[in-house]
Picture 1 (cartoon, helix red, strand yellow):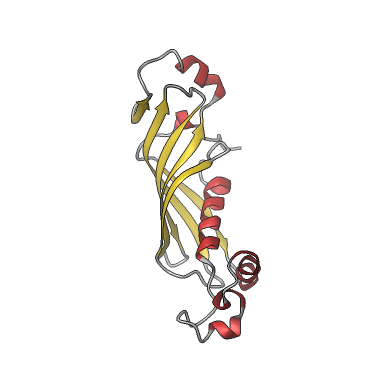
Picture 2 (cartoon, rainbow, N blue to C red; picture 1 turned 90 degrees about the vertical axis):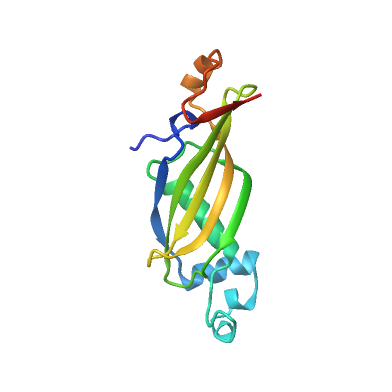
Length: 169
């Protein structure tokens, strides 16, 4: 089993890569019926007359799949839970039935708050690609991540942060 990454294991510039998942027409329709019931997400025939020219996944489904890929299949995986704090999202291309999505994330900033020795914040740029290596979604996120319990207590006494991180009060 691959070791899971805690906040203490992350470094600025580090990249995480996921496995891929293929999105079916039924996946798109099922998600949309529950969460984004626009005709180009739920009706293959009507979607042909849309600006997309066919059935496409909801952008929210693409975002949710991206986070699921990051949490469940990143190599190496993050130790959970991973809690979102902020996000800036841009949809670049529609996701269509049969597209296979994968995620690459780069750690851009790490913050170890002095008042919370068990957790901190990680900023990441996340890009979701289809099977043609086209970017379909970009996200700049800040997540709350947890420290390795065996290391958090001992580092509470230390004033010097881990390299590449920023202490805040």
